[in-house]
Image: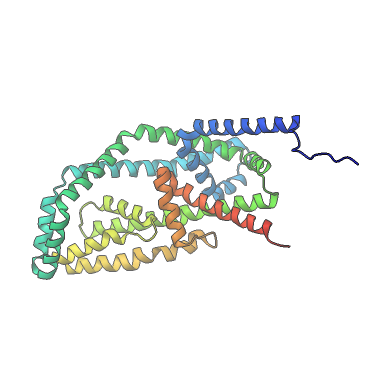
Length: 350
């Protein structure tokens, strides 16, 4: 009885073809990514707007049956109600920042602050020590220069922003018109089961919904309320500081108090006790609690990530992808958690 040596099975012709097809697919996918890379902000915002405007689109479906007309009406509404106001506010804020920095005199403001603290010897001594050790005049001039460069870049980059907005609206039109086809294509290409794919789409939709309504919209409202109280109290740069409060409110662990708390301290040091108390009360009660009041209304029982996870997702996303990372970060984290859950279920013992 003879024995045959068992060696490695030779690669068949079919397997070799599959390897070539897989390599070609990876190469083409990478090239497609390079082609789409300049338009990633437009693509991400198009998908985001398509997700958050679904209630409006569903309402239109019952009234406009033609897909093309429904998509055109939806894009027109998005342009009038979202794009134009956001573009106008961003441009005006950039212009105001640039104009404010041109008149910025750090030495005069620091001297004014030190004079206001003259009635509080301990606070004045502490402030003098901090200003000498940190050289606040130079630091404030450097910060003002950086902010001025950013504002100038926003104004000069308006053409790029306009192109991105037009591409977003172009893609958004076809997302509205071919919604069923897009979802069917995603399901057909997904390696997951149909149930898992539907759960994944729902999870990603909830993440985008919670990020926009629970984070961005709430932050905008907080910034608007902060700007209003600054204007009513006669503080300079109400629109600018309202925008800053809105941006800070997006980031967990930070918030609008980073702006209104020093302003209240400045009013108190100058002897405007009533204005200082009003600002503290408004910031603590109205601005501080608006998140707890509005989030359940805007988001409901949709996904809400842990504070630490949300912080890493938002800040890390912005650091890695820019402004669009505000969406990409939470989506990537949510997708990772979902895939880990699938892995745990499939590897769990029966």
